[in-house]
Each structure stands twice: as C-alpha cells, then as structure tokens.
Length: 241
Image 1 (tube, rainbow, N blue to C red):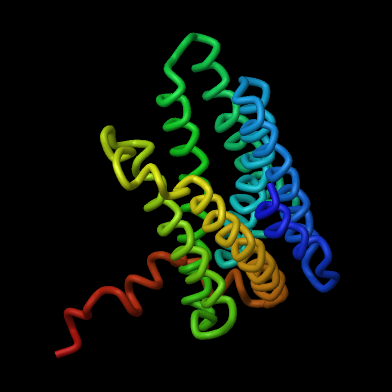
Image 2 (cartoon, rainbow, N blue to C red):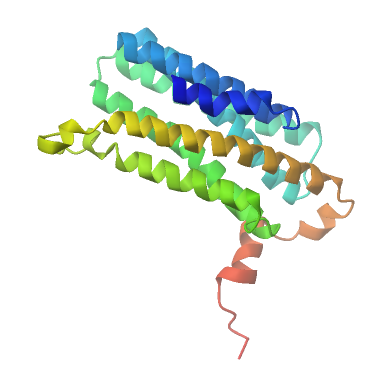
C-alpha cells in the first residue's frame, strides 16, 4: 500500500499537471487501498476493490491514447470525445466484469487472475505503444518524456520477471522462497505506475498542441500515424537506389 501511495500522491500534489494526470494519481492512491484490502482479506470483495481502481487508471490511459491518435488524425469535437469515452469505459467494464463472472461460475483463481492480468495489461500496452509512436513522431523520445516511458517499460518488465513463479509450476521452490519476489513486483509496478502518470501528462500536452494546429486535418488526412512511421523510418525504401 505504501508504494502505491508513493506512486500516486506526487501526481495529485503536482499543481502543474493536467487534470487527467492528477485524477490518475488519485486513482493510484485508490489502487494502494484496494491492494491492501485484497492482501489483507484474500476475499472476492477484496479482489474487486483491488481491480476496480486499477481498471479505472487503465481507462484513463486508454482514453488519452485514443485522444492522441484522434488528434494526430485531425479528428476533434464532441463526436471524437464521445468515441474515446465509450471505448475507455466499455473496456474498463469488461476488464472488471469478466473476472467477476468467472469467479461467480467457479473458475479457478489462477485462471481468473490470468484473464484479469491479460485484460489490464492489454490496456496498458496499448497506451505504451501509442505513447511511443507519438513521442517518436513528435521528436520527444530524447527528452524527459522518452526517459519516463523507458523507465515505465523497464520497470514493468522487471516486475513481471519477479512474477514468473506465479505462472510456471515448480519455480517457487528452494532458494526462491527466501526472496520477497511479490513485494519486489509491487515496487517495480509502482515505479511503472508513477512514470505512466508523467507520460500521461506529457501525452495530454501533445494532444492539446496537435489540436491547436490549424492545418492538422489537411496534414494527416491521407495516412495514419502508424502508416507514416512505417513509410518514413521503419521500412527501407525500394526506390532509394
């Protein structure tokens, strides 16, 4: 719980942060409380209290990721905003209700946890990929934004490395039982969550800047961000020789 509060509270206190970043930080504090509740009770209600705020934070990130793609494509206004709200809310509801339904039907806890981890991780992965593409397109990877994104990716990968024993039978034996791997997972995941809050704040600023461009629709109307990146930097030109 302490590391979760340490991840979220600084974002709430940051007065220069975007409202969505501060809301994300507040929900991270809720994640800390939910995690404490679940680990203290290991009950179904504790599990739901744990994953609900986590799904909310993922929804905030997914909302902004979709906003970035819309802004880059020159799409703005109430219709675009409603679309990203709908996608974020529905995705969060699915991520929470599917595990709940599985538990109600008696599915094993390990399977329920695996499905939840996949759904939650997919939302975070979409945010990370979109942030990477947008930062690359806007030339921000060499700035603080790129550093925050790199730390977030490295932290979650290291944290997952400390959780492999939860998936592979036989790994949680011998000398490994003396290591507080689950506690280390929480430390790394909290670092990732904090950096994601900063990435979320920067991505919000990028969205605002893109929407302020008068000619953004004309500039990008013929190709998406992904297509432009592949054409410009990732694929070799067949006509360069």
